[in-house]
Image 1: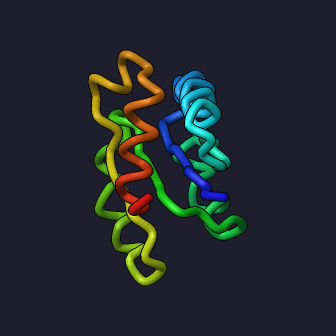
Image 2 (image 1 turned 180 degrees about the vertical axis):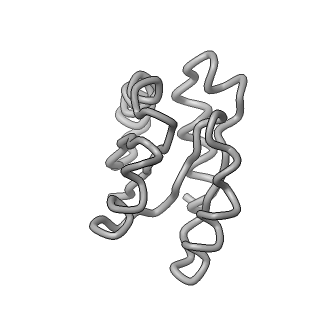
Image 3 (image 1 turned 90 degrees about the vertical axis):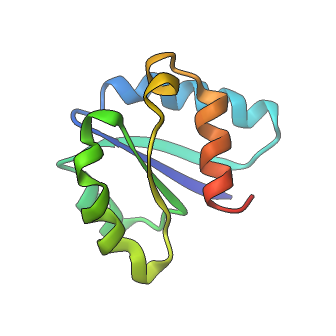
Amino acid sequence: MKTIMLVCSAGMSTSLLVTKMEAAAKEENFDAEIFAVSSTEANNTLAEKNVDVLLLGPQVRFMQKQYEDKLADKGIPVAVINMADYGMMNGQKVLQEAKRLMNQ
């Protein structure tokens, strides 16, 4: 099972995207735990949970370097979700990007 963590400013807007990504994963028989947290919860969550990829909502893209530096030694890829895919809540495209980052 792969663990995909999404981070956004409040954790709210991303919850719908999580639902769409879960549906896409189920369709593909891809075993994944997908969840979203707010940017204020992200560090605590990373300390408590092993994740395979970290995706940032476009509104917190400024945090990308911070997380890349923090997670580099763990080999956890970090990327900003494509703004169009985020806006359209395209769970399948965002899942594909997460899988690409994890070499799945």
